[in-house]
Image 1 (tube, rainbow, N blue to C red):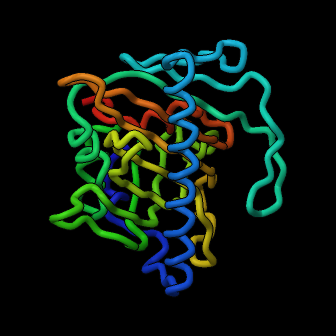
Image 2: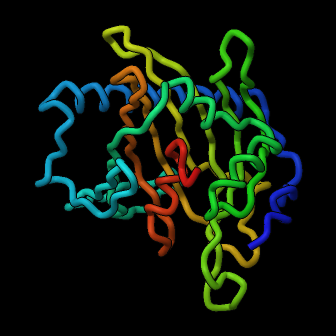
Length: 249
């Protein structure tokens, strides 16, 4: 599918109150802290070995592996809906530096999103709905935005298949582990506002993902990601790998 729709914001400007913005910022920081704690437990245990009794390997791509938990927990969403969508775990390595990964992850403007989608084939549409934090000279990898993203599916031009779309909070940040080690973080978390109603011809899906980039060699990065993707029938991996650097480049 072409990229013509990528320049169109289907919702118009998203009006957020200061309380809305602060609530989103607080959530993002708490979510990142929780995932950093989980990550430190992962790398501080038996190396970075994945517990095969808990996790089932479902896909590999280059040097990354994606696992799903074998016995999903019943989780309750913010809207009170209970579901047993399995948590996923992604581990792997890639070349480069933490800064390289973060440079690819930070895309706070429509133009930067368009550049990214030029090499992420599955992503056919997107828009920045609201900007909460923008990169600065001092903190070039720190950003926080509310975005819309559409995932292209084969045969979506027919009545048989509908594309999936997401409205989510995205945050990129450089943080330090408890030992002082510098890591990069990229998080997605689905959000909902009165203005972001479901769009015709698409199925609204949900995503909660946190990816961490850690330098483990002069030109080698360790990848770690975890979260839950309710893709409404779409293979979760299509979405999970969008959070990885250097995808299909």
